[in-house]
Amino acid sequence: MAGEAEAVREAIGALEAISDPIERARETSELLRGWPELHRLVREIRQQAVNAAHDQDRTFDEIGAEIGTSGYRASQISRGK
Image 1 (spheres, rainbow, N blue to C red):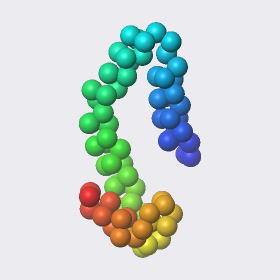
Image 2: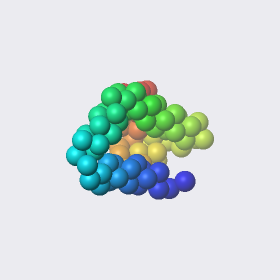
Image 3: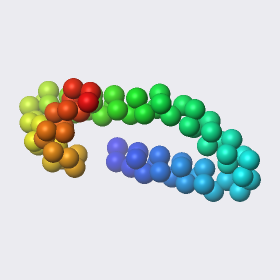
Image 4: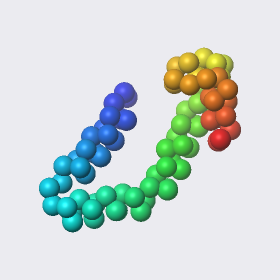
């Protein structure tokens, strides 16, 4: 399942590539209007994933190392912070 983050980056690149500035602004505005909810959802997905890994007996230090952060931060993520 690797590559989902890159797909999001490509979608943002597609916004940048819209040649008509009004259409580009309109499409970008639509995305921005929904951004608070999308941001909340992405954070929840990450929290659930960290908790699932922890439920599989991985330590927060192990999880942190695997996701590119510290064990302390992984613990915070698990608590929704």
